[in-house]
Amino acid sequence: MKYEVLVEVRLHDDIADPAGATVERALPALGFAGVEGVRVGKAVRFKVEAPGPEDALLRAEEVANRLLANPVIESAGVRLLGLLEAPS
Amino acid sequence: MKYEVLVEVRLHDDIADPAGATVERALPALGFAGVEGVRVGKAVRFKVEAPGPEDALLRAEEVANRLLANPVIESAGVRLLGLLEAPS
Image (cartoon, each protein chain N blue to C red):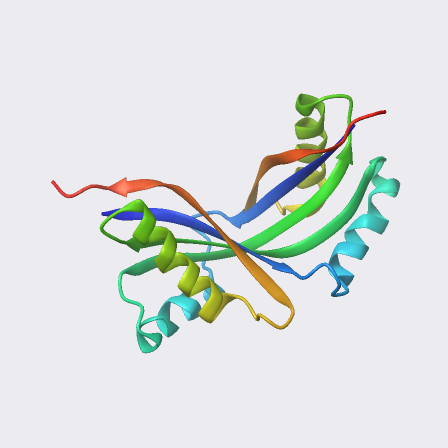
């Protein structure tokens, strides 16, 4: 069965985030008050073939931790978005 | 009240994604079969001050569409992650 997953890769809280700081500084000039703590990370979507939802999540977590995130500065979170194809 | 939101900025389906293609090509060499359709986007988290959850979402969508996404090649989706602080 094929599942769609979303991996969010984000910087650890104690790592500086210049992209997020730049966004935050730009907001007041655009008329947005009350927005803070902006952190910019990566959102990676993919489809994974697995026998069930738990296996799909495990496989996606392995991909996230071995290929997508740099564990020294980042952590990865995985969300299962849905079942795309069941076997006919 | 303060809410935490997550904005996912992703490339339209018909826009080429070289970063996603590179990840996809690297997977078989690392022993991952059955992963396809990799698309790399941005994940932006922030805290927004709003009177209620609907307003927090609306405000986050405006930030996403006016500052974070380039509508020519990207679309933005917003998720409310939770309430951080209620007034005492």
